[in-house]
Length: 111
Image 1 (cartoon, rainbow, N blue to C red):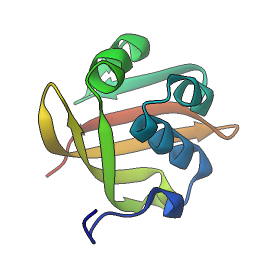
Image 2: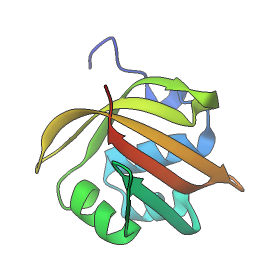
Image 3: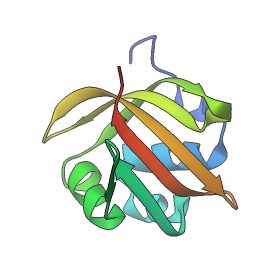
């Protein structure tokens, strides 16, 4: 692990921490548990079907997030995201948390 990666246990928001932990563990049950009912998402500004996107971008392609920094009380992350389809890229993740669960996330390439 590189020194510039923020350990997941140090993520400030518990819901975001649960989301990232589930992604990195490839744990579908924990991932679904981290989401609020009716959760939504967008990728590079385009609304996506959450179940279809997460299957393709996370679970079927071994997605993983290495968080580089957090802002907005842990609800905005910059991470190195990698999967077997696209390799590694610098990404930004913004989370809306309601009732202790992720109600929405927006992701896309970071500068």
